[in-house]
Image (cartoon, rainbow, N blue to C red):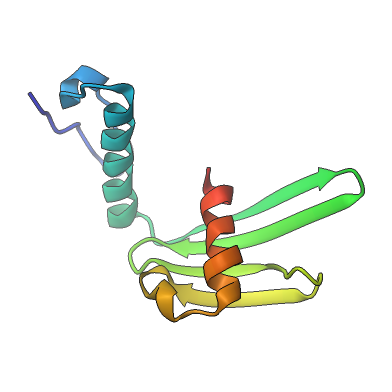
Length: 114
């Protein structure tokens, strides 16, 4: 049996796994990710955040602006040569982006999200 959780602009009720008919924990995670994905795209204009790491003589900082409705992403950070980089692209058109965006920036976005 599947059920749709109650969704409102102010609160999401996350159902228990068996409510989704999940047969394994991975199925449950997938169902919840799908729920959040639908809610985020429907209600949020943009998410802005900065990913910071400080370790053994190295400081790393990457700033992101993600617009879920259009899946547009803006990145500010540094390249491998430590030069400032700012790039905006549509994730749906990743194939037409530079090698740096495809091989470094977009994977960093996925990493910094989680």
